[in-house]
Length: 275
Ligand SMILES: [Fe+2]
Image 1 (tube, protein in one colour):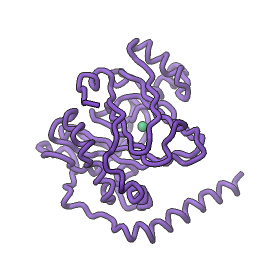
Image 2 (image 1 turned 90 degrees about the vertical axis):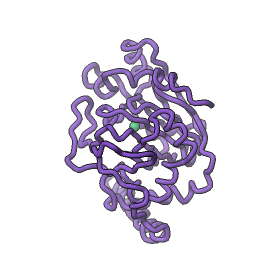
Image 3 (image 1 turned 60 degrees about the horizontal axis):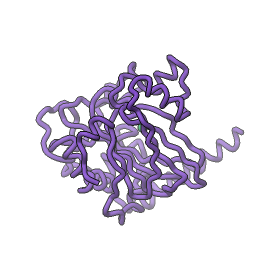
Image 4 (image 1 turned 180 degrees about the vertical axis):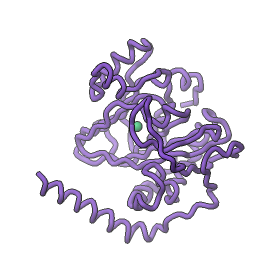
């Protein structure tokens, strides 16, 4: 599929596309064991994960980003998402992109099937509201596709629901403000990664709530990585690829893997006890 800039600007998304080199997905997934206290906030594992920076700089992704964002590109956010069976991430707008413009890349990594969906509503990146705001003001049920779609259509009749059943290694690119939701109706944990980019002329911030438009922001500066080109603005805390201090894979596979599994087990154990 070719990149259609006009379609992206009007409908707000492109894809699905496929990552060419998926040979390192297993080792990439292990990097989610890196403890969160080693990076600045929950959307910056890119500070410490070499494989994450590798996928964020994937040629296939980057060539498309360069058409959408041009030459100078910051990676400002990244997040591994494990979605449990029967898990739903209801309709929402990523509040960060309510404040600055950018692009999100959502990549399916493991256990993607016809039972794991990713949905977007086209044209919603042009709207000045968000599903949670509609829930608060009009009691729109943000867990229901049709309820959110109906409301979106009132604001722009061109809005259309697109539901994708991606395969492992496939990705969608959307304009940061697109309303989206995910659902896992399979019996396995669905694993994906979100990569969020912008141009250096945007000031990136860390939200302290998920409200839109009344988002509150932290004073801490989120670390970004210059994936391509130059930053001539100096608005953000930008790390150069050559200066990154990644966590050693051996340590991830031994110490951090064990730590992650123990804390996961303890969480489950406490849940059982409290029920
Ligand atoms: Fe999201």
